[in-house]
Amino acid sequence: MVARSRERPGTYGALDEARRLWPFVRPHGGLLSLTLTTTILLAVIDIPIPFFLQHLIDAVLRGTAPPPLLGRHLEPSPFLAVLFAGMVTLAVGKGLLLYGQRVASDRMGQRLVHALRLDLYRHLHALSMPFFRNARTGKLMLRLIGDINAVLDLIRDGALRALTSLLTVMAVCAVILLLEFRLALVVLSVLPFYVFTFARLSPQLRRVGRKVRRERSMLSGDVQEKIAGAAVVKAFHREESEIAAFAARTAHLRDWLVRKAQVGGRLNAFAATAVAVGGALVLWVGAGMVLDGRLTPGQLMAFYTLAAMLFPPLRRLARTNETYQASRVSLQRVFEFFDTTTPLKEKSGAAELRVSRGAVRLEGVGFSYTPGVPVLRDINFEVAGGEVVALVGPNGAGKTTLVSLLPRFIDPDEGRVLIDGQNLHEVTLASLRRQIGLVTQETFLFSGTIEDNIRYGRPEATREEVWEAARVANADDFIRTLPKGLRTQVGERGQRLSGGERQRIALARMVINNPPVLVLDEATSAVDAESETLIREALLRLMHGRTTFVIAHRIGTVRRADRILVMDQGRIVEDGTHATLFPRNGLYTRICQEQLLADQVAP
Image (cartoon, rainbow, N blue to C red; front, side, top):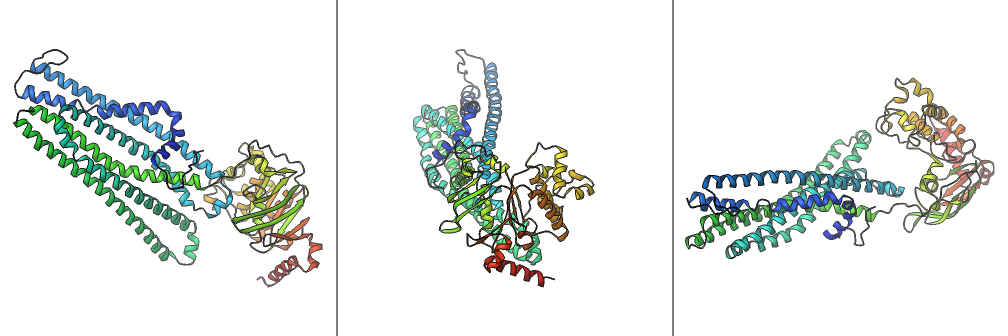
């Protein structure tokens, strides 16, 4: 996992970012060394070229004898050939260095991004279910895809180019200071103004970039949500309203992008001005020195060429800084996600859960999604192995929250949950969730085939086991009528199947794991009567000999339970069977009477 920052989220410095990225870079030390070596060589490889130009002007074009090369005086023609060979060698060497740098940096960057994305995805799956209750899919997708890709831009198009440009500036400054100290001071006199502007505008670029990323995140979340709810939008004829809201959101993003371009444009404009002013100063002062005899024309041209090599890296630094600051915002958003979300962890040295009877016990359990607003209060009960327990109560009583404790989708704030005497907080999550079968009202199938979905929890299951699970779930008959049978594609979220078919596939997916403990949360409430009958038959077959928790509003389902727990405002207020609870005229009696009345007036 990424190292956690001790700083407040959003206050990361460049050194903190580098420290937290280092564990991902360290395994690729060879590629890092190759990248840095080629970067250093690329920063200085063009520096000899102005001196070739100096010799060409002073010796050849003026008709004087060429200066000695490698200790030997050459005639003009061989001298030109040597200059040409030297420039070609530098050009070929630069091409090879560019290729080596790009391959090494891309390979290192892609591996780093792969590891970071995997770490982020692993962290995401380790979060408890309350996080997903409030999370927006579009924003999470932007973190995993957009922000992580921007980290690659940070390495390749941000930090690496900035390093190359900075090294070039430093090398050129050193050479011109050695070549002609006074003229170098003239050139360097414009740099403080550029550095001041760079330092002043960079934080603005980062702040605006953070706003842009936030607006993109909100836009992505809105679009994903409205696409998922397209049926509701159409049903209430809200298309124009949603288009207007989308236009407003995109306009807000557009305004921030324009603001970002303005800040970046100011920095680029100042860099271009510095280039022009610096070049003009070199020609003005240098021409006077040539006329005074203190410089040869070749030396002036060499100096001017070197000075010209100084300013393009400054312009690149300005352009690169815009990319770098935007990429840093994305990197900080990734770090913020790690720092502000806490995964549900296994206890160190957790043991495998061994289930023999399937007895469940809750001792003094309390839980709150929001601090100070308890959803469960002092829950105490014990269920014998193989017992069927129905949970009933008004909406918001805490029924779904209670059963969410069993697979450790959430952890209790106080108290403990045990299966066969083993504290769930002290067993591995994998062994726990293998023992819990869960079917909810909102069935979710993954894109792929029916077979893929049934064997999702046991990829190694045989075709015979898949068919047997389908049979137990009363799904085999309708699967056999499909042209491709188990190979039928279910579509996104299983939309190519009916609600009852999706529910039976979900049952088969649970059956194939053969769990000793079942949790059925309104498993038949969203299907038609025919499908409900088939699902109910499958459930009765599946529940035999297993500890089962059933959340249901239909009294016909509840009264078959061995035991009924009645919940209200996060507490268990009644406990017994239908025969013992109904005559008490308590909450359970009122629930039954309301159900019977609803059935009588139903069309």
